[in-house]
Length: 190
Image (cartoon, rainbow, N blue to C red; front, side):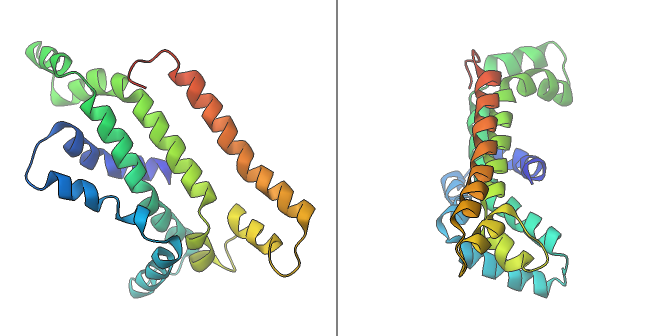
């Protein structure tokens, strides 16, 4: 989900971070819609949409839903990264004859490393913790950690099992934050 989200968000993030166009503020606000709509409503919408599109595979449905939910995070983080790349570096590389691909590879990519890492971490954490879409689209065949935790909190509440599953949800987040902190230490764009 994180990699698909990053690839899909790159063009929009570039446009928001480096270009000026009419309706930019409105477009930026529209990207925030998945963040303000409750997760269960989005899940019900996706289940109906997947039925209309004849997509019966719950894994594909969950991936599509999680990508839509994580796109705003990736777009906003990457657009901040794109806007922080100094125009002088881009102009200098173009003056020296670099192609658009070379400019992206040699100028943007090193400068965007913190944004990419932060986007991947945010998307991964959001996808791991997303319950509504996994429950509505994937149940009962596809089980994720949040749906497993929900089953422990159901009618037969088993406190030790719920605590263990909660720790399972917490540990990857802590490890990922420690990794990103170590990788981004000393980078002025982070």
